[in-house]
Image 1 (cartoon, rainbow, N blue to C red):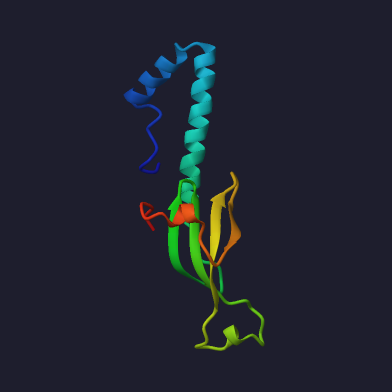
Image 2: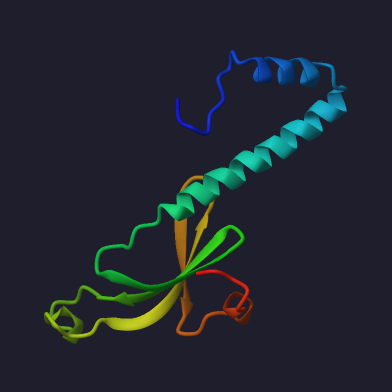
Amino acid sequence: MDSNSADPDSPAVSKLQLRIGKLSLPDQRSLHHWLGELIASHAATAALAAITPRTGREVVAQRRLERVTYQLELVRCGKPNCRCAIVGERPHGPYWYLYRWNGQKVVSEYVGKVLPAVVRDDQLGG
């Protein structure tokens, strides 16, 4: 059992189960919906935290905005005759990529050379 899971036999869980059992059906459905969103949010956060650079890429910077991670990456295209294939030569870029959880896996999207203004805001960590 990991550190984030509760013991299903613990008094706290039993007490919670009893209280939930006393809720009306509409309240139980509302709680079910909220809990599903909470679990999805935690799964997305964990998946995005575990992003590893793909082969031929180097992460230069990273920014997070809600459930999306933006990464500035240098890219080696993989073409054997390209200048980036030569050891010591600079890769292409840097380019921004967006990473998000689609409910099943982390997917990436090309953003471009410039990060959207909302993500460049100084109050964001990264």
